[in-house]
Amino acid sequence: MRFDSKFFIRDREISFTQPSYFIADIAANHDGKLERAKELIWLAKKSGADAVKFQHFTAEKIVSDYGFQELGSKKAHQVGWKKSVFDIYKQYECDISWTSELIETAAAAGVDFLTTPYDFDVVDKLDEHLPAYKIGSGDITWVEFISYVAKRNKPVLLATGASNMEDVRRAV
Image 1 (tube, rainbow, N blue to C red):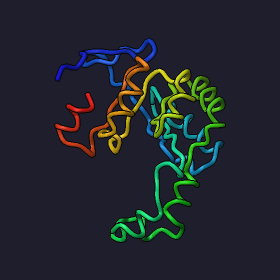
Image 2 (tube, helix red, strand yellow):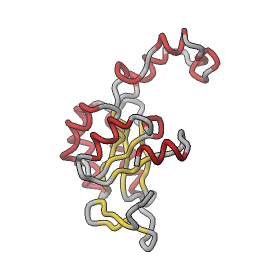
Image 3 (cartoon, one colour):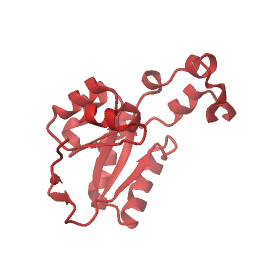
């Protein structure tokens, strides 16, 4: 595999010779509340972050209660949750209608706005606002999606935590 030795997110060079590009992974820690999400952006900036990253998913597209209840997930940590897996994911969605406010808040704080999209629709809706993409490690084998994102001609940060080298090679 060949990787570029440097790339840019906006005008910031990302390379081994530059200071680290610190991405604060807010993910779904906004607790389903816009004001909390905005507060976390400012806390990230205060902590020295260069960017904040959210997760844009809809519960309907990424989780199945049936899967957790019927397909052997009874041993998963979610079994102890007081609400259903679907209801928890629904609660922690990053509402697409928040996008403008989150981007404005990130700009005011002086950090880049990033997200991990979990479906094609999110890519289409947010592309104009994103300087780069982050693909979650759980999607590293979803080659069709990675290809779709890569065609945007923006940097792609690929998480590899749930993969092996064959998965990484295939994704690259």
